[in-house]
Length: 169
Length: 158
Image (cartoon, rainbow over all chains, first blue to last red; front, side):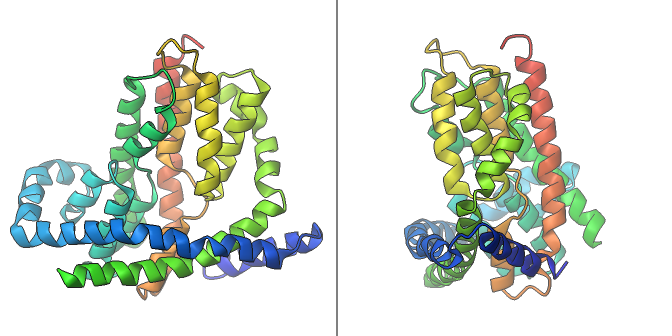
């Protein structure tokens, strides 16, 4: 596994060489976007991480966990991931904040940490996509499409944790 | 509470390094025509999957799919928005193609979850690439389930 990334990068640079593309300028142009992107994300992330702290300190976190625990247990999702699973369809920066919090609390190589990574890494913010895609069209009600999108979001959480159990336990 | 905002700052710095690497590498691949080549290869599949005949719409759809697979998020959204508009007949009805585009994007299938592996690495994980396979298998399955459901529920009319 550890050779995947170096191999991939070598392939990309070899391809640029073969296609007579200037890999250096291409890389610089892409990497240039990194700082503005992270800079724009900072206020949202700061706000979301404060919200996570607040929810933990005030007990809202425990309450939410208590309400959703039976459902999560049924789906085989560790209960610590409750907030991440619930928030995922609504907010990208919110779930990123949640992922970081979980990784810092439970450790990057823990079972909960890995489940959190897979839950975060396998689905998009469904509600955000729906507004961006359909905002300029005549479609006002998404109906079944939204139901399928949300179902897939929950399914990816359950399935992700299942695969983690198969791979890491 | 200030530790929370400090975490945000540290996370953004880690993300800058992750973004700088991957946006750089992905841009090299993009300038070599990788996205275009992949979307040309997937065009036939796109036509069947979305039930769309129009060549222009198909171009946008396969461009969106290819960019998603390669993890070029910011390159995948514009063609998706254009394609949704092109498929809109103005009658407020969701077509199979629109539903399919929305669901496949919501499932977020990609070869490499670069943000996640990047954060793992920056927080000191011993094996950040270990989550690649479970991630891929999970989103592959949900994408297939999503496609199946859309075909079932929107299948009779194109």
